[in-house]
Image 1 (cartoon, rainbow over the protein chains, first blue to last red):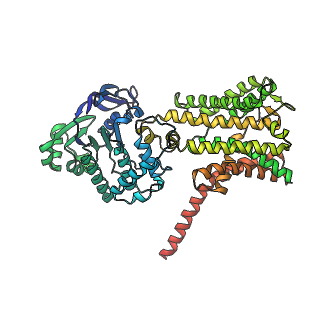
Image 2 (image 1 turned 90 degrees about the horizontal axis):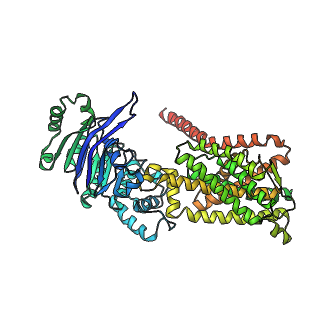
Image 3 (image 1 turned 60 degrees about the vertical axis):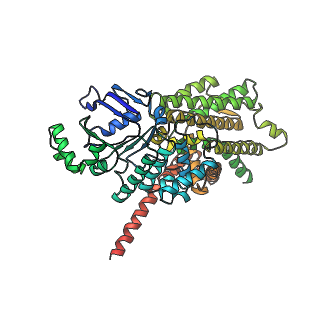
Length: 264
Length: 300
């Protein structure tokens, strides 16, 4: 489903601030995989996600989604393959537009925008049914502006938008990091439900080690622009936080002292 | 007094089309586009030059609209393709248009006195000068508001609105934000140029200086409209721009009647706009002040 081959991303190349954010990353994600990604600050997890999304174009290497070579495609030209939820709840929706207008924009992801009416009556019925499933009471507020929703509601709406038109790959970039713990749990549970139900191929970046272990069938740990640990299936199911820390120490030759606080 | 009021309403209607153009960039795209100062004169220059050369005023007005479209396109290219900040690309096009407008007019001003204008057919029916302005301006303004209301409800129009709101989200939906900004700037400047053409035809001359400060007039009208006539739904918001432009002209006519020196007009307008733009900030400040005061009291 996703193939990254020798992808290198360097920021500020040729200046004193040069930073290699991704270093020769090769990664294949199979159809239906739910991959969780952890790593400390600056490990390269967000850069990896942004390279897949087309926010950054890599200096070297190639990226394929399904059979399509998207290496040089801009963000908007590969959007048809991707559903995205961002860390900042403000980023996923247009604040001055209504819930139904936001959903209608997402329903047409990757399609040309015509002079047909922006939201049709038939869509509305579908939106209502889907919003009802979120259990947040949004089904009665189709014409409420997205900007008036809480952070958790906006993330749930963004998640619905990202999956409304089935994406080949769902990218969740620390999408619960800005929420309070209780709301974060709820949004994560909804995400998991959506992913299972649609058997969506998913890449989820998280700061939270327990969430990374709890969800998904495969876990990647990144460090200094490389994928350091890659466990899946039964092995991942048995993994504990302690195992993960010792795995990290063995693989990197460093202790996780400075990152421990961030990851637990 | 009646004539002054009618004159103000008439002029307000002609300027309202420009206000709608400013609204598209300033409110919908969230860009302060200074191209308008050049494109309003461009519209005036093109249409008066064509009328002067014996062309039909209708053709001349349509040509003004198209030239405005082109001016918006240039600013849009500078901003989106060459990555020049929007404010600066607007200024660059505005300055470039100064030379273009002089070329089009051949001199610093053109008079089309006693030549036919877009208002002539209505006047031929026996209407007074101001009545003809009100008819043409009102009809065009309502037509434009209706067309824009439809357009911004379509898939394409929604994409333009969302671009001004949250470009990251729009790109994630597979929409090329550059094209949406380009489209918005083109529509906006086309309307501004049409407005310039109507204003020039109403006063029977065009002048190279006539665009100076027009962005501030557009903003003043926009804000007056928003403050006085609300922003409940999109159609009313568009209509409020027309009422705002008219109210602004009535305010100006009133202060002039009261004896204000015309030279002070631009200062007056600038101060009004500055006050209106800072209003939300003051409101927030007062609210936090009140909250902290009542909060302090309840603790006692």
